[in-house]
Image (tube, rainbow, N blue to C red; front, side):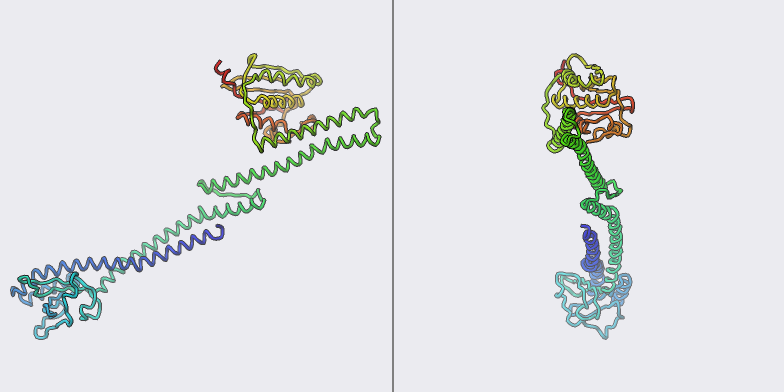
Amino acid sequence: MKKTLYLKFLIAYGIFAVFGFVIISTFMQQLTRDEITDDKAHFFYTTVTTIADTYGASLYNNEISLTAIKDELDNVSIITDAAIWIVNPSGLIVVDSASPLDVENPVTIEGFDPAANAGSYYSVGNYYGYFSEKYLNVSATITSGFNVVGYVVAHYDYSKIQSEVNKYLNIDYILLAVLFLLSLIILIFFTEIVYIPLKKITKATEQYAGGNLRYNLQVESDDEIGYLAASLAYMAGELAKGEDNQKQLVANVSHDFRSPLTSIKGYLEAMNDGTIPEEMHEKYINIVLNETDRLIKLTNNLLTLNNLNTEGMVLELTDFDINSVTRQTISTFEGRCVAKKIAVELTLTGEEMYVHADKTRIQQVIYNLIDNAIKFSNNNSVIKIETTEKHDKLFVSVKDSGIGIPKESVALVFDRFYKTDLSRGKDKRGTGLGLSITKEIIRAHGENINVISTEGVGTEFIFSLPISKDMKED
């Protein structure tokens, strides 16, 4: 397309011009000539018929003189710009408007044969060889007593008809030139509106195919081509973002795997070469086990995210009591809460509150949010968990009073492996995947999760769930 589309359009444009010229110079010329010839022939036929019925009949009935006929034919000849004859059946020219009367030297048309043009009242030619040029010859019979006694013939110079044809053809050529210019404007519009944008899109596509996903494609248009360009640029942007995410993923995975592996390797080598005395082996074995648990957790989270993205999340939707699930989940953090002297305040809607969701997945969401809140809460602080019913939805809030999230980082907390600079010092066990998994689970339910945070004050996560139909009816 890039190398031939415009050329094809130019060739089509040239063919249009050539065919237009050929049609006008051949078919239109012939049609115009025939039409003008028919009109002239009809006009002269009316004229000669009138003469035949009046002056011609009077002449052969001896009711008018040749001189009077000659005067009348001269007047008609001047008006019609044609030679008017009266010819007898043998071809003798009785009266000729173009010549003076000469009864002593009559002129006879050799080969005169009125039957030769039977079925047509006019002909185009030299009239039985009498003229050296072409003429339009129109005749009408003069009758007397049901007998043909003569003919009235009008001869009109055919070159004058051709001149009229040329005038009309000039108009046609001017119209063709106007159409050609208008089509040239269309070609210019096509170039600016279609071809140039398509050329830009093609070049951008080649750049994207070659791996340059950051190539800047700019097509300012509100039509389908502009939409195509915008979609292509958006696709390239998303692919570039995905490429960046992939690179970031590899970097983060490498970092998060390397740190515990380095610790494990270092402690095991120290125990093996005696750097760590035997009586301290138990302590460092526990450290190694903790690092191993961290690797297992990281691996499981990666597998979970991979399954969510490639296979989609299959939900087992049931009606269950969210209050009960919340209390059970909190109980698993009792030891950690006691160690950090963190209190958990529960403000739940009703004794029981049934929602329609995947119980296991929602329990994982609550677990991840509480785990995150504990990790970033200060000692001797409070974590508040609250449920609120509104518009057939249940909103679950998990709020801590910890270090908070910087304003510029709030929109990134759900990205994989993302950790704020403030959290890196406190989150020794985190993988940066928990909140990503949480968001994927909530999104799979067709619900939303939001975060509100103030640096140095605390963070609140709020997600929604649909209330079960039984609860709505009650």
